[in-house]
Image (cartoon, rainbow, N blue to C red; front, side, top):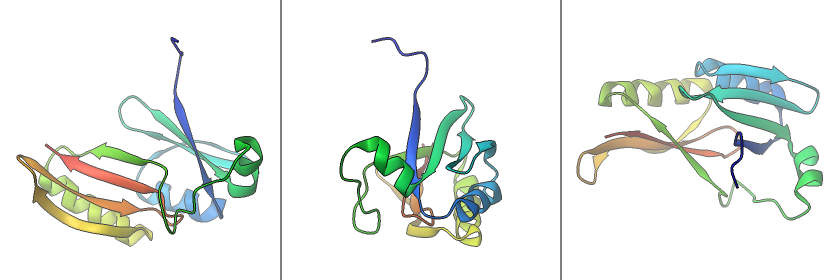
Length: 128
């Protein structure tokens, strides 16, 4: 396989809340419709589409994860410094996200934290 592009599709319950959350964190909007809101992440503009849960469920043809109890994936966001990671943690909480872990050093040369968006999708912030 040699795909031209890869992106992610996640389920959400409230498009307005999701749009507000990711806009508050400064991610670049990538369009919106009645079924989804979309954002670009990172320098490579990785696309994450946030579909209304019932729309994505129809397309998945299977059981979806309950993000209040488990996660199907964790995305990692690279911070350029420990100070930036700390600032992002504050921004996440201010925007309505949940810190799963507070910013801290771990492993050899790693610093970061884990957060969940309002629908429980998890992100790992790393500085290394």
